[in-house]
Length: 358
Image 1 (cartoon, helix red, strand yellow):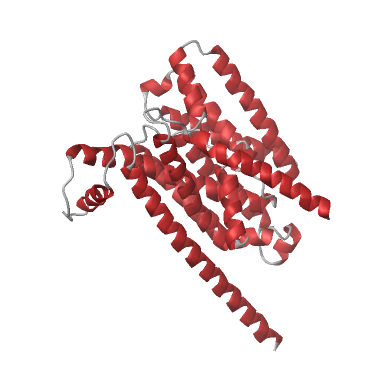
Image 2 (tube, rainbow, N blue to C red):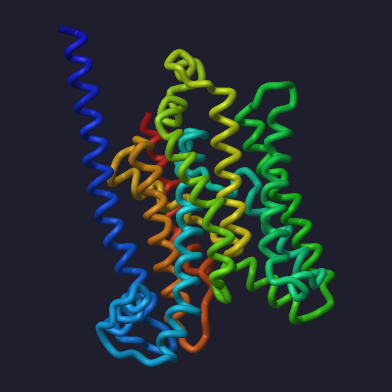
């Protein structure tokens, strides 16, 4: 009877996971689609939603309405690639945040905690300061990605000294490396002689999606989607790792393989995101935590929903950045920080009160 009871409970839990995932994916899918359509329509050149729909349908051979060539160029060449890059960046940051929060068993963990964001910023700033971004349009994202991955491997290498990865050491190494790289960035900013280069550095550090093209979409889509898929496939193991290493091993998790694989994959997708958007803070903190409150802590649900939620958050933030103070354009990182910083303080106060209650 006990065996049948356990099977029944397992089936119920599987059904519950499937139901929550279906509801969350359906709701977030509708919201992401609505946000994308609104973002395509809004801007200095307002385009009716019916014309946006007609332009999209025209790409698949369906002629339903008239639109101007200017509207078509704005939608297809300016706004669509920007929205897609924003969605990919949001997916990467949301999934990385959810994975790292589970891995560290800390709801306030963020992709920047392992030095990836600081490494990406350092690579990008050096590219701008040396003028390489003017010679080759992909120099900035390539340098940023190299910096992000270099910082991630450096932090992990420090934590793995002695043959065994220490999570507290990894966190402290991440803080130390981030501080050091932050000092490097500050030194470069002080020494850059050209005002134009300094302005570009400051704009990039604030995070933004302006100037994104279909070439950027093609380069970013592979690493981000592959990384998100890997973390999603490891979501069950991530659930078990939250029980502790010994418990996870007893349940069949290869801890020494799974933990560094999740870390490396989170670094990969975060590094790719930072390379194409600059430093966009708090997405990996806010999105997983909000979805955890709504749909529970099971990573089989949380990871894929964090991908959709992150895409929604960044697309909405970018739309606000483009339209809030026309004709001036704000930076996406400013919008996400205005939302994320108060939320982070709320989490700190809440966690402190919970700790004092115990």
